[in-house]
Image 1 (tube, one colour):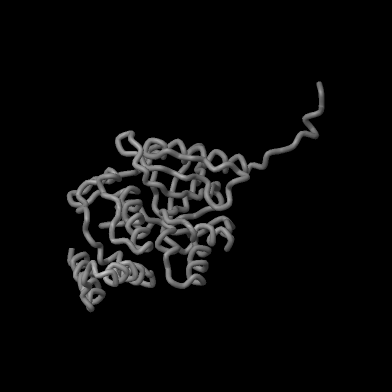
Image 2 (tube, rainbow, N blue to C red):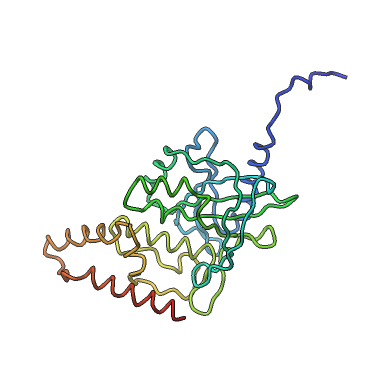
Length: 272
């Protein structure tokens, strides 16, 4: 027998696990979005650019995904219960995590996007995979860049949400009596954050995400007044441009009004 196999190149197991993890994520998410895989030589910070689908139709709602894949032997997670009143997904934190590193140049790349960005973790557990994600957008929008870099690099200290059920079902929606949860809820909220970050109070209709129960055309004071994010300042710049043209009038205490509304919302959440 030809013994040339002895000198053939080997594919590291980490590469094989990574390829399978990305393929698994694409498989479960493809029911809800078009997954545009970024070729390896073009991968400078994102593995997929995704377009959300609702009832099989493209929505032109775009978001970015970076994938980290590992074996369960290298990871230990602690359950934090359900993310009640928010996305309703199961929350976890790393007790033990692989030595994944996020480089500063990658974070700089993410900072330039005006779309939501997510960090997905695909963890092989025997013959199956478990899927989790973190929302990068709230961290990328922080005022201080050094804090952004510190927080993103310290992903091991941040909450993550399990988003597959029964191995192969991606939890896009969790129906509720008032507002739907699931990944689509976070995508909607992060799209609002991106609009506010760009100085606009307008955002994509929640129905375009396939969500039910969300009011549209509303101001979200609890997002607009997010701690250490420049949303109100950026929106104010846009409003002032219109005011200087004589098109609108702005109440001098509009920020105080937003802060007051936020306090009412948070108090209502606590009471319920």
